[in-house]
Amino acid sequence: MAKGILYLVPNVIAEGKNDVIPANVIRLLPSIENFLAEDIRTARRYLSSLKVYPALDVLQFEVLNKNTGQEQLHELMNPLHEGKNMGVISESGCPGVADPGALAVKYAHEHGIKVVPLVGPSSVLMALMASGLNGQQFAFHGYLPIDAKEASKAIKDLERESLAKGQTQIFIETPYRNHHIVDHLLNHLKPSTLLSIAIDITGDNERIETKPIGEWRTNKPTLGKVPVVFCFLA
Image (cartoon, rainbow, N blue to C red; front, side):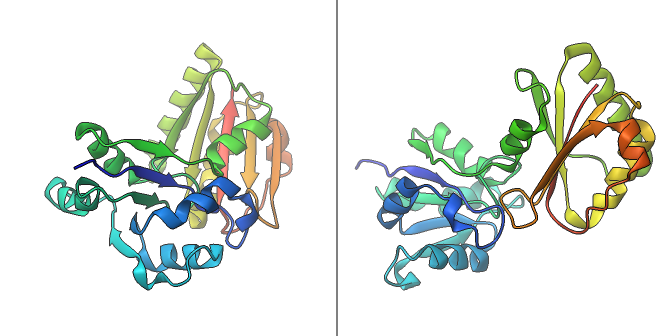
């Protein structure tokens, strides 16, 4: 029996902004009835908002998160072995990037299952695009350490690496910790280092600004509890 295809289904970054989802994704979705998602409730709400299914009752959802084990993963991927297509939906943006969807993708490659990434919004790439920083040499680091001393060390290490390689350093943070990260960056980066702050990408309050740390210190940003992507270049 031919195996199904694992589709990586993009989600919106800002809630309700469905116009960022390409038409080809909308056309393809009806061929997928089995989905993996971190949160089934929000995945169902997202698919419902796209209005591509007459009813969601025909769809099957299973949870895939950072705690999913290998034995459980094999069971979750059974529909693919039965010849059915499956979709992985991230909570925000593209699956597999700072997202447990990578577990499903790794499994698919190990078992000869075709993987198809669908075009959609990526806050990481969009922030880099709009930063004006080096787009030829960059690295995404996920989240910085929560501990203040460890975060300070990580920032200084990344700045040295940025200076040595001309590399843009990119990372994200949970919205409620935005102010902590800003304080760390302003306190530990050199005044000449360029910092780009991308707020609420694709949302109604989208704002992207790039300035030297010295300028940010004289006009400290107030970010609030919204999604933010940080990029800096020494």
